[in-house]
Length: 231
Image 1 (cartoon, one colour):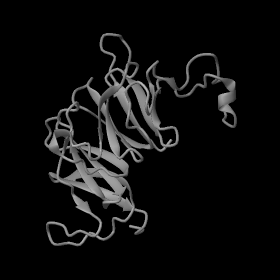
Image 2 (cartoon, rainbow, N blue to C red; image 1 turned 30 degrees about the vertical axis):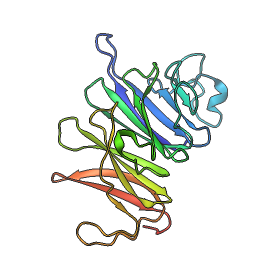
Image 3 (cartoon, rainbow, N blue to C red; image 1 turned 135 degrees about the vertical axis):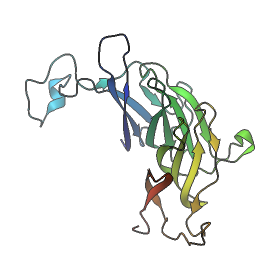
Image 4 (cartoon, one colour; image 1 turned 90 degrees about the vertical axis):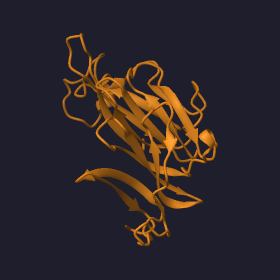
């Protein structure tokens, strides 16, 4: 696994607490897996706890398990066509129940939007590959390595910041997620070796590997790590 995010799904009217889930990306296996974390202290099979303490925490039920029949998705199966080299994932929610995920796939130059409202159901929502020309725009998401999602205005308007490392250069691209089933490309923030709007030369983005976002005094920022530049 190369990426992981956790999220909670409320169980309204069922008399139980919200269920925690994890979604993982698998680069070599070209796919994703959703796990039910509601019983993390038990192991379904004794062999799975090898090397761990707590022999009483084993049995035929419970433990960290697949969320459902459709919780495992791989490239070229069940409608998924852009999971080759799935490397990172981020999640967001527009309401208490409406949860979504975005998976970036390095080898497909792409991202896939997942509907996570019911983690036991089919997840497919939308998938976009670089240069597809969708909406008349060539998406600049060549060789993505990481993704982070942030809210821009406090009205459930979310944007994904994607670190890329392709032939067009390392950098950061932005994707508007306001309508999850209809994502839109925004202006690329910067590429390694380019000059920013304030005249600053960005020369420490070589082989961008990881990204996270934060907001300070109403201004949105992204922190990006660079493997080649040790920066």
